Length: 450
Image 1 (tube, helix red, strand yellow):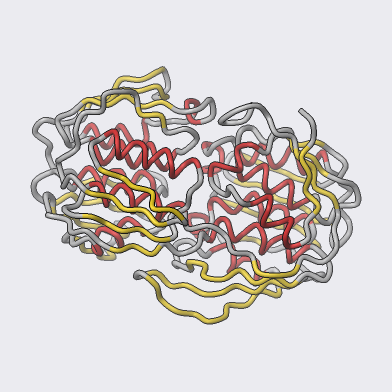
Image 2 (tube, rainbow, N blue to C red):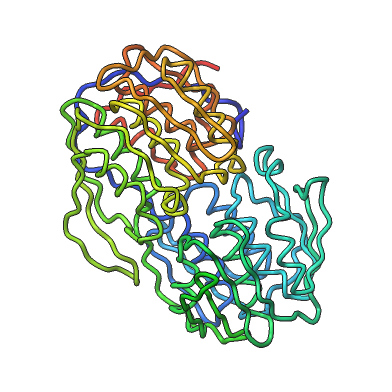
């Protein structure tokens, strides 16, 4: 069943060249953070280019529930009248975060050091995901939590009445955990320190500095050490959200595997902590170039041009790159299916606790479509069939996971036989215009009767 309604089965068939301009939505990670920090500042924050997928809309509703005035002005233009650090009101009802792990974990962090109580829930997928990785460090501030077994939603958090600053070493690379701790640290006196052995996406740090927080970053023997001084008076900002590199991955990868394709994806955020996929694709021999490189809102941005690349080669992806492309491994495995040789992906155990077990989901679907896959707890390999070598013909389970559904639809665009997904509904959580955008480029994606 789809995250927000009845299943929407979809089918993708081999198509002619994909051509044109793919204007993907705003960055989901930055959109979440802009709404939350806008709610925690003094004054009115203006946001242009906000991703209006369900995940972000659920975060907007949550900020209203905590007392911020959130207004949709149309065409991706929003404003947030903030309540200030420590100014969250106690919500009257349960906060429903839908399918969004990022949303719920960041919101938990933002409220954990306020003396209020809030209950959280989500859809079937989100309610099966682990929350202890966030509630454990939040407990060090004095926040208490009660949830289902295994630290799962639904869950109630009792915010700290007298929060204490913490020093926390992130046990596994996770931008969500790091960001939750930093957001909690905003309303704790003194300095909160977060140390990560491997750098993860740094949108929270960049945006905190932009809103006026005192935050420093230092490379130490332990790793990347981030120090935040608590109880700042954050100032309202005008945020222009770059286009989402994780969404751009789908038209880019489709262009690489569909013969004759030439697609331009403008205005993509190329934050170094997010651009690992594009580096990997170039190493595989992809005809992928950056045009009009520039900086917008403190983030590096460029237009990406992707052209059909018939001579892709499998590679071993460096495990230290995993944090910069963790959401893109499913669609990378699609490109690897059309490459020659083995693509090896290590250091990716985080994929097993996303919206679904993404390694298991992709491995099962790729095998059903004739691709050889091996996998273990923290790794997987795809042995490519080369250009034109993917048999296709199977129906793949999306497991309520938007990226799994989109990845298999991309796989079908160059396969010998059409490939179906049992439910494309979850795509709306992150990329609501995916279907129409790909069709405009020339893709053959159709909805089937349930």
